[in-house]
Length: 180
Image (cartoon, rainbow, N blue to C red; front, side, top):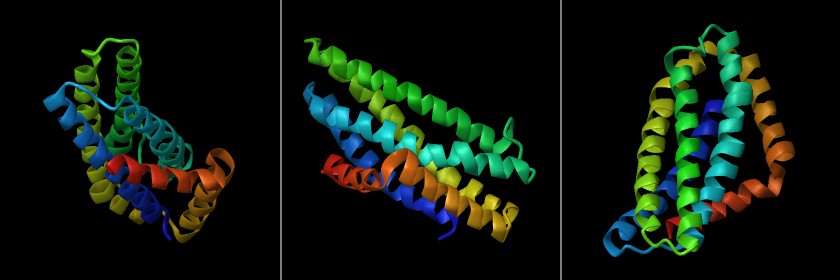
């Protein structure tokens, strides 16, 4: 499997989680209450799978390889992707902060959580569309067969040694649980 295909497979799992997060947020806007346990699952998934695994592959090896092959990282598609990764991290921080406030008794924090979650869902859906439809096809033209093979090996290393082989499957299941 080409590295971009592997990243797109991750995107499918992330999109599944986003569908559940969106349902949760919309339900909260209607009801004013939220399942803080599920919110914490969204935070955990986002930090450990979306950011810790998927974005790690992109930021540690994929984007640097593209830069080596002539795609600048300070402007253009890679710069946009890196900026959006940062925005996503900030939104997850807001969601977690809201969950902590909600658990501490501030029931108004449910609306803060819902709004941040909807922003996160929109950001990631747009981000994934840009990667799948613009960056990945472009990068497949930049990368040689040797680059593709090297990236596959690097992705495997990240999943097995930095994330943990069993952890990846755990987050697949968690995405399905969040989606309901």
